[in-house]
Image (cartoon, rainbow, N blue to C red; front, side):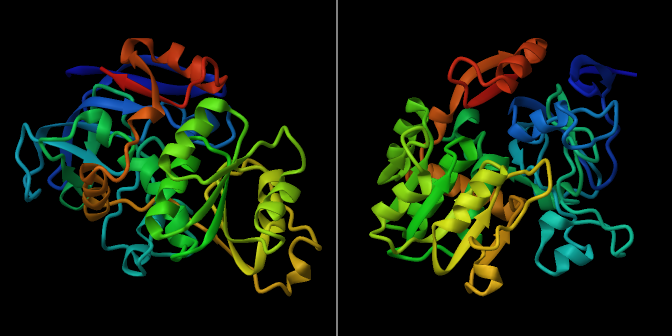
Length: 357
């Protein structure tokens, strides 16, 4: 049986490069040869044992590649075509999908349901940090890459761009809104870009890293609050003349940033949560106004599927958003263990790491 190289979760704090059989293609599947993928903060949660996955699983959920083989029932694609697939691969026919929540795609019974079930790559099935990737329900989940766009231009579409934009979308940012984004990592930076596209006119970023602050301004941030230069809540309230923000987007996944996001909301404002939390959250009585503040807290998992990917690539192709600066480092798949070491420890100004087999 033909083999391929893959980044495999062995145990807590060990993801290693090893060999696996190239997957067999079922009638609804497509096998793509990966040309570019990347590392995500969620992969680090997996590495550290903060998010449980099965031992032996191939990690990764941001695929760009070329169709190697198509299942007999896959329609609308040809072998040799450049494609992406979203990190979320909804089947289209589950209860969650039919409710309009494809990211939560899972069994149609309450007892069998698992949150984030639409996230399959590197979660419930083998992922993209490998030479080949099997894409389920390929007709619904593959999307052809326009010829004028490079791999690197579309690399953020499968997850980071879709997730960041959904923070603004789920927060229902409106024209003229004031928005704050807590943490300007790749997802937070995409949330900044999404808020601008949705019509926000005041966009406040919260971070302290100069390179990230520079990118945030290019993507639409009008102000940046440095959390090392005083109380963040006080700084934001000063910037808003005491009114607070319409939408606070939490993109880090910590108690402190979640709580600060609550504290800067205007009356009736919305907290849009994007962070992946590794412990229970607490709602402070005063920040939550004892449950009487008309606040809205929403969460989201990046929308996936073919149409979502098409729309995101349209945004990239239009020139309205340039996310190439987010890719700060490049590694070969053979060196992926070194890439994890760099990324997990956030050394050398890393934002996103591109991996090429």
